[in-house]
Length: 374
Image (tube, rainbow, N blue to C red; front, side, top):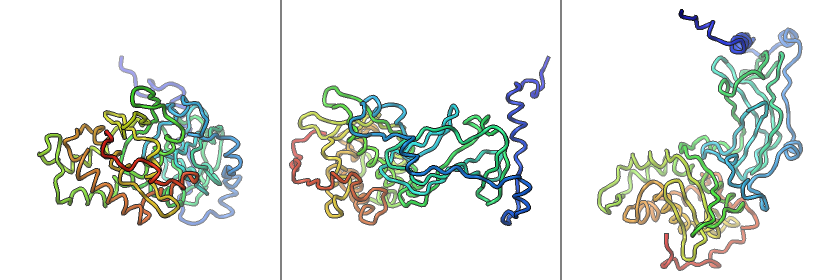
């Protein structure tokens, strides 16, 4: 006997379907009138979290002294296009910020396929850099009235029954660095690796902070039209592992933007500047401040960019005979584009975000790289 689709649905599915088919919409383009608000019973109320409440209810991430297992935990994984995000699971709201930026006046919005509008769930006075918050979900049982993008009040029922797959959350902020994230086309998942063997040292919170910031700058750069144009219009050779055959540049850009995962590590071996291959990528921790301007004056990024791209080339499957490890890409294309975008404030991080490193002087480090292995 063939059962109907309705008969196959369990009671909970029927209830959820019924509950959310009765979202009451006010579709007028006009501002809600007093009579309209009175018809809803009460005006929309938005949960607001102050900066102090966020600090008290959350905790810092990649903080000096934290347990290494926390630093490398899967809970700290993020995607380069979404280093700050919100999620609701098991009745809890989590706000995760893997950026070194403090974002002020941040709104949390919810949308779902059945909606013709987007609901304002919460407002945050400030989300601090390198911080996460775990608190009770703002989705509640019973009837609730929300503000919306359209400016109209929306009455909902039993939103706490929504499964995570039934809705999407997104954060909104007017901060310049926050809005630069929208340009990122790179899809890479980022995690800090523990390592601690051979020429790999153990991950440190300081290195994790530098990887989290530098990889966002690199992702914005790789996603830019400037990088694309520089790659496609480069007059010299961009060749593969045989040292001669030209690489399909469109395919190379696609491989960069679609790199699945990077597992960062700290390189400590004597005479070793970086290591890379597969998901792994590591550079020496003391070189990392070179990604940024120090005190708005000095930037010494060519060497660290060469090492990073060299190891990234290995992670993309290229060897030492290719232009990804030596030559055009690490020594000309990337440094030229990165420096241009830094100078014109087109990257999220320009000045070193870690102030105690702004006295960094590259002259204090080994500048003779001739015998350094990559």
